[in-house]
Image (cartoon, rainbow, N blue to C red; front, top):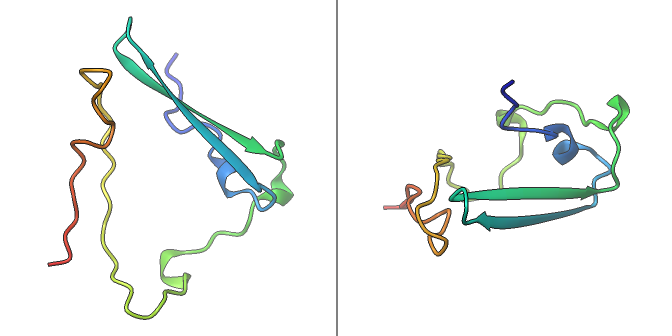
Length: 93
């Protein structure tokens, strides 16, 4: 059974979430990295989810430049290799 790669997304957008902790652990026997996130307060109920806000409705600060983002997930090759080492970089000109 394949599990979702984005689990518990609603916890991130809950109105009452006030604390979040993230840990990363390298598993040398499987050559993979596991990332775990914990949230406070816990719980899941419909009233705690804020209404949808579309990108064009979010107010921006003056002189804000909008740029696309890219997320790359891959298996690392060494324990010292950063997860972000080979992500595309952005440039403002």
